[in-house]
Length: 329
Length: 74
Image 1 (tube, rainbow over the protein chains, first blue to last red):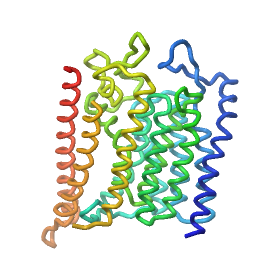
Image 2 (image 1 turned 90 degrees about the horizontal axis):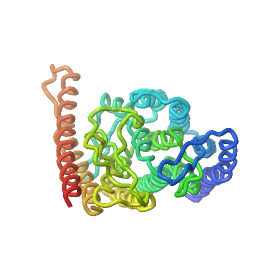
Image 3 (image 1 turned 135 degrees about the horizontal axis):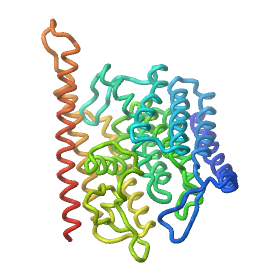
């Protein structure tokens, strides 16, 4: 056990300090090459460098490769390859705006390493009631899981610091749940994601100095999804990201089709004091942010805090779910 | 508003647990006579799982509409 704690500290430190040290260099590099986008929620013409996914990639992959040297198991290899593939899909979308179907389809292929390496178990575990064996159906679940988590994380990347803060909280909750389940190797792999997103949050929080871009947000989601599968904690992982699932659910149930988010009407507007308020446009989608500002306009900081508090709440529910896995009725 | 969204998350969580229970207790163990193709058994299970998802989405859509309408009115 002592050896595992030391390994956890080493790989967490690699994930955290690599991103902490490399992101300022990346910010300067992107600014020099004019790779910036307008922060639409700021007064004036505030330009922010993008994509920060490159530094997230370096942090996550370096720490997971180090972990693989300590635990050479196919599950960690699947995490590394799927994360890199998730980043690749995101960076294509960063460089060139693709259609609404591009990401879900491309991300479905990112699940290939999990299937080819056999890094999954076809039992689906539920709290209180035990597990159900679904060999054929589980293959479909694996293929669908990465597009779902990748797009869900990407869709919550709406305000400064939200997706990185959200990933940090959800990943720590999932890591704790994995430790509760005594799945230490994958729990440590999840810590890499948690510390990577925490380091990135330092630069992404309000006011952002860098945006993760689709490459960063999709990579966060893809890594989270593959950890859920190889760690056999699919249900717990879903509970931990319920605010983002609500966001996607609200969006899909109001738009009723899969579209690129740039193609839809903005669900929120700026009030005179630059707070965000709900649009009066009937055809604009309902999102988590629109729901939060439906009653009264809120500042960007207030909305970010509300979303992160909701994530903490669902994180606690995820940990409770992990304890409930050990109880059978 | 805050309490309504927290309640929404709580309802989703409860629905996940109940739905999981129904899948494990009723859908998972379904078997037909030995001469029935396994693919048909799987198809029935998929249909029942999709039906549960449909109910899940229906309930959540009703809650979502209720929350949004009450917030807009207030």
